[in-house]
Length: 337
Image (cartoon, rainbow, N blue to C red; front, side):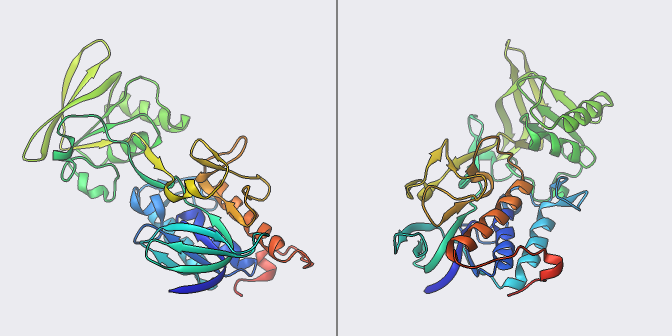
């Protein structure tokens, strides 16, 4: 299939979805390509039920609900989604960055005037703990993401990790599971200070147990069903923790895939951009969200939202340099082409 559009957005996570809206407000038609079978990125694939607290106007909203609202917000601009496929090649059709041919893994071809890369951490997968026979338990008892909290109702849960995901899910599941134990190699966690304080308070009340400083050392069970998780301290102390489920939250392994071959300035698997415009070193290509980097970058969804707006306005200026534009608020401009 062949298409033509103003902007191709690579990535349909929350930032990519908001970029549809911002491009629409700038009167730019968008096509969106994503390797997953549905929109939402990590929010849909890894933690749909996890509450998010730093989205403006939402004191708390689940990741799934956030994606649903972003889809509705983008809908008036009639985006075209190309899901379950990956952008494999970008070919410039002129020298000023206003004509590109985007080709995907399924043979889709899109002629576009500009490109926004909103690919999050690229192709991602969980960092798996180096444990013997891990694969035996991954189907039934080891989960790298929480997709349904009710799965863990009245179960014994071991959570491993020291970041926000480990701490946040420990605080959520302590009221659902029969028991929650958090294994971390040091007493200090890397989570948000407020979350860590709540974790320590919960531990002091006996609502969960902090197993520190310990690391995972082994698994026990039968026929792929976990019964215990073995842990060991740095000085050789060993414990065996009752567990129906192990939730290892050791972050994601990042793989840029074909993006690494697109001639962009890369800094430690991220794309360097101009903070003011989100433009890359190649004319007509922009990067926003977690994949984009610049000095003092904050990796927050709300930061990506702002970058989406900057990129959309920069693209409009790049494509129509002689156009006299007057900035308008959405309250006066309205929504729609």
